[in-house]
Length: 286
Image (tube, rainbow, N blue to C red; front, side, top):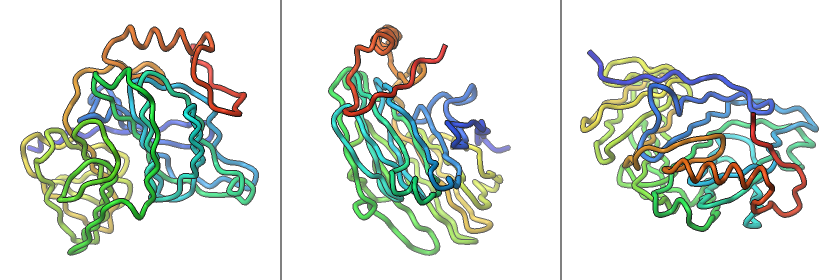
C-alpha cells in the first residue's frame, strides 16, 4: 500500500486567469514553510488584455513568483518596479505590512501574450512576521542548475540536490523545478523533513504509483522516494522545515490571529503603505 498523500487541486479563476490551487486544502494545510500554491495555467491574452491585479496587502509571508512563459510587472509599496520574465524569481517578504501590484507589462498587453507559471506563499518564522518588508529579483541566469542522465534540476529557492539558490529564504526550504526525459529516474533524498511534488505535465510514477498533473503528492517523511517518468515530465518539488500552525485569512498569514485582525482593520481604514502612483486597490471580501 502506498503512503503517498494525494491532494487534488481546486480549479479557480483569478480575474480571468485560470488557476489550480492544491494548497492549502483540508487534507494538507502546509508543506514545510509553504502555505499557499497557485498554478497559473497557460493562458492566452489577446491584444489589449492581460492580468491586472490591483494593489492588495500582505503580512507574515513571502511571495515567490516563478514563470514558465510570459512576463509580469511587479510594483510594491517599497517603490520596487520590476519586470519579471520567464525563469526569474520575484521574491517579496511582507513582514508587518506591504502592498503590491501584479500586471501584464504594457508592451505585452498591447501585443497579446501568454502567461504560465506559479506563485507560492511561504510563512515567515515568528521572529520575522512583524519585521520590515523587502523585495529582491533574481534573473534566470543566477539560479543554479544540474543536468545529467535525462534529469534537469533548477533550484528556485533554498537548497537541495547539492545546489543552493541565491534567494534569501528565511527558513530551511526546498523549491526545485525538475524536467525528466522519458524513462528517466530521480531519487528524492530526505534532507528536508517535509516534501511534496506537483506535476505540471507528463506522466510520473512515485515509487510505482501514478501521480497525474494537477495533484499535489505529499511524500512520506524520512524515506527516499523514486520518481520515474513514463513520458517527458515537468514538475516542481517543494518542502522544508515546518514552522508550526499558521492562520490564513484573505491575503494575511500569521501565527497569532490578533495580527490578522489588526491587519484587516488597518487595510479597511486605509492605514497601509501605498504603492506609488496606484489609485486602485482590492477591498477585503465580505
